[in-house]
Image (tube, rainbow, N blue to C red):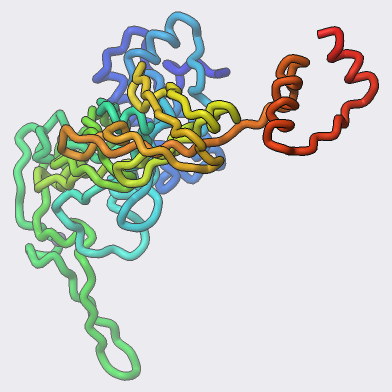
Length: 377
Ligand SMILES: [Zn+2]
Ligand SMILES: [Zn+2]
C-alpha cells in the first residue's frame, strides 16, 4: 500500500465515519469513469474504493492506523473484504460499484422511464457444511444505493420542494417533430430533466443531488438457518436498492452456497463418509469411532462381521439436521478395508498359519534382504 489512504480520500486522520462517507461520495462523483475522461480516472476510482474499503470498516481502520497496512486489502482483488461474499446480480449481468454509480448518475445510453421503486439485489453467501449443521450468523458486506441520510431519502434540500417538471409539464415525455422528405415524423422520448417522473425538485439535497439515495457500503448480519440447502434463498426485505426520493426499497436476496466438505458428502439430509477398517476388523466385526458433523461429535459405527470393502453401514440420526426440525438424517459410512502394506515377523507367521488353516498356498516372495531384516525385527 504505497499511498496514504486518508490522502486518497482527502480527509484527516481523525475524520469521523460520516466525514469519510461523504468524502468518498464526493471523490467518487469526480472520478467515476462515466464522468471523468482522464486516462487514469479508472485507476484512481479503484484506489478510492480500496481506501474506502479499509477506512469505512472500524476494525480494518484501527489496524491500518496501527500498522500502516491491512492484510488482504489493496491489490487483493475483492474490495468486499473477508472474501466470502460472491456478487451476482440475479437479474442478469454483474453487479458492482460501477453499476451502482451508473444508476446513481441516471445511467448512460438509451434512457428509459426511470423506475421509482428500488430494485431487488442479489448476493451469494458461502457457508460451510458445519455452519449449516449448527446454524450461523454471517455478515454480508455489499454496496447499494441507500436512503440519503442528509434528507432522509426525500431528495429535498433546505427549503426544497417538489414541483411539476417545467421541461415536460408533468408528462414525463417530450414530443419532438422531425421534418423528413416523407413528412413530419413525431417521436416521443423520456424527459431528460425528470427521467420520466413528471416531477422535479426545487432546491435539491446537495448530498444526493435530489435523488434521495446515495451509494453506500452496507453491512447486514444474516442468520443461516439450520439445515438450509445449497442454492436456497433468503429474502431480506428492504435491504435492496433504496427507492427514488423515498419510494419503496427493493429486497436483498441472499443465495446460500454450501461449500463442499473435506470428509462428508451431503445428499439431502443424509451424510456420506468413508472409514478405514483393517482386514481383521472387517473379518471379525468391530466398533469404530469417527468424527461427526458437529464440533466434538463422535459417532460409534458398528462394523458387522464379514464386512466387505465398499460396504455401506448406516448410522441412524447422525446425518444433517433437517430444515426447520429437530430431527436429523442418517449417516452412511462407506467402509474401506485396508490391506497392510507391511507386516511384522509375528504377523506374517500368524497369517501363514491362517493360510495353512484355510488351505491356501502362499509362496514366500520376500527378497533375501527382506528376510534378513524381518529376522532381526
Ligand atoms: Zn420532465
Ligand atoms: Zn439527500
